[in-house]
Length: 94
Ligand code: SF4
Image 1: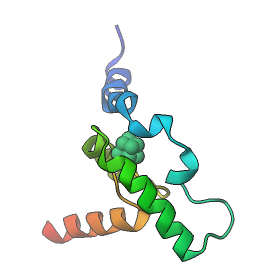
Image 2: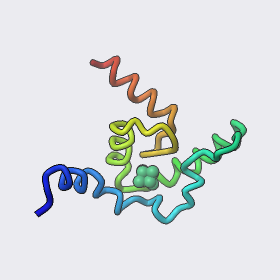
Image 3: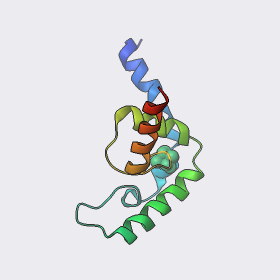
Image 4: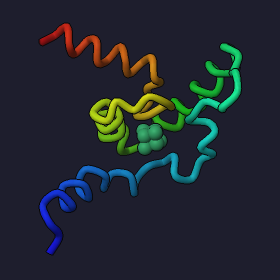
């Protein structure tokens, strides 16, 4: 039998098996290591967000990224900046 922390981790990441991005190019979801012009970044993020829009685990993905304070990439249809705005909105609501 799995220990409680291992079980909690498995349950909290079970959604990942349903992730639509598993079959997509990860480069769409994450910025390159070199400078990315704004127009290219916006186009890349729009492409990633379009995939997220059709993903059945979008909410779980977003909450995971918010909890983890994931600093990079599009998660749950939200870019880094989008997630900062979500977190700021939640802080304001408290
Ligand atoms: S919401 Fe987007 S980033 Fe999250 S699992 Fe689905 S496709 Fe991947």
